[in-house]
Length: 330
Image (cartoon, rainbow, N blue to C red):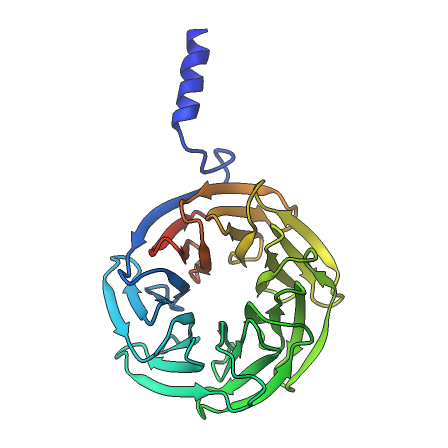
């Protein structure tokens, strides 16, 4: 009886970061404090050495290991919604409420260019950015807009404006071969595919929707490009067959969560990591849909999730005003 009580006490005192001894745990490593208010977006540099964040009129770059601030970038005249590193890590793009997208030299922090929309039908600030794999194209979209904008990075001019086919965009991503650009839609909760090379949109995925009344909050492709992942405020992560548009798998977040804010494939494509709006991070088996590990943070307003290229570190940010780094053991 005494032994049973001792075992029960030990179990209560130990945080349940993993569901089993041989399963990959999720562990909070450290916080990086921009000291500038709530953060809206976070991104890792391709080499994993730096992490960038944005928020109310600020863009900052930190050393990922030490937490030291490397650059404080100024230029936007309003809140900054999104940041993205170019594939070579030399350029950082940021999108702001001032209706501009700005390109920065990562090494010096100096401006490289300002991209401005010139079509009167879409004068909305961009809410998401994504570089093409070759770094020549930058895609942007607006949460209340109807188009995906495709910009020439070198020219600084827009090359195509692609109708999304559904209202609003919360997030977009390129496939690893650059053939497709996927868009997560607002309000209609649709997920759609587009061919940026030709500047036109494909039909929305067959049954490519989250529950009615919810938003699709995030999209990303599997490493082999055959599966598209989408997250939603309906508290699900869904895996879609890119070729057929059919749903392959549905993962459901923790009970009473307000929804999944973002999700991503880990290297190899065998596992998926997701985060809820309340900062519960979960790791899933991408083939079986089994929950492998889970850890809960304290942020009640997560805005963004970023994953390092090696898949060992995840970063989250939001209302709690800090960047949180999480260890994801392979």
